[in-house]
Amino acid sequence: MKVLIIGGSMAGLFAALLLRQRGIEVVVFERAATELSGRGAGIATHTQILDVIESLELDTRDLGVGIRLRRVFGSDGRLIAETERRQLMTSWDRLFTLLRAALPAACYRRGHEFVHAEQNKGAVTAQFADGSRASGDLLIGADGLRSGVRTSLIEQQPLLYAGYVAWRALAAEQAFPRELHDDLFDALGFSLPPGEQMLGYPVAGPGNDLRPGHRRYNIVWYRPADKPTLARLLTDARGHRHDISIPPPLIPEVTIAEMRGARAILAPQFQAVLDVCDRPFLQPIYDFEVARMHAGRVALIGDAAFVVRPHVGAGVAKAAQDAAALAQAVATTDSIEAALEAFEAARQPIGRRMVGRGRDLGAAMQAQLSTEHEHAMAARYREPAAVLADTATLDFL
Image (tube, rainbow, N blue to C red):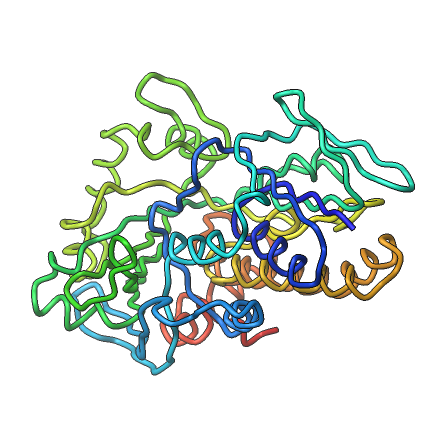
């Protein structure tokens, strides 16, 4: 059996490694011509991720920074809520590097932009923008929220904008004064101004440096933005409006200055972090769920199928478990079609629950609330105790 995987990020790598482990030939096709980078974005790990990594016999030592506490700080800087929950915080780059190094170079091809695919009862053939083609028994769409596989072969639905954005940035541990370090650095910290949320946690420093004093602090600031405001935020200095997201280098300085200028609503600890952080980048918040995860010899995994708001901290866990379920179904079922039916039956309910959980957690940041349930969730997640208990956990599964 030969499997074509479109998309060389987390979902694609998990799928490739898990299928190869079962003796199946794989080729990953990545659109980008250069090696991928997550710009140091932080990731909260869960047992669902670690279990899959360990099943691949990869080394999970030095994967990230362990934390023990979760804390909420008030607008005056006082600690207003605290709970204990141990968790490992890693970074996109660290996890990607671990997976990428485990896949032989011959199995990973950069600079291949998927255009469309044709399938029949015996095979599926992908065509790429450079005119090249590849054929296999199964094609996996692991190409993220902008999935070309999804839109061309399974269904066309727009991403649903949530009504708010996230500003993300990293700050060097060395830049933290002692008191600020004591308050924030070894915990998942929160500031909860009305209708907004700032959170932060430690991750490794450059080159996966885990030495105390050499690490970084990852911050995420969720801010409401209606559609006209989003359009302005996605417009670069030359007046060009970008679709879905804007490349970090193209964000105008005036836009960043406007964001920094609103920091007075945050707890003083997070105001101080903004003073020492790297150049922030913007992430509009979307969610999405497919009606089907497969069609014929084509399957969707990861964000190509379900886009979950980042409050759940589930993106990588979802990708890993999607890939594991698909690899298991394909390796143990004679029929491709039957394998994909079994895969969808196992994973679609989980994807829908994750999307729903993300919407619940994000309701407090939405300016528009349409249902009684949304109003109830907004009220719940304005409370510090609920935020501490439910953010970046998968206890609801």
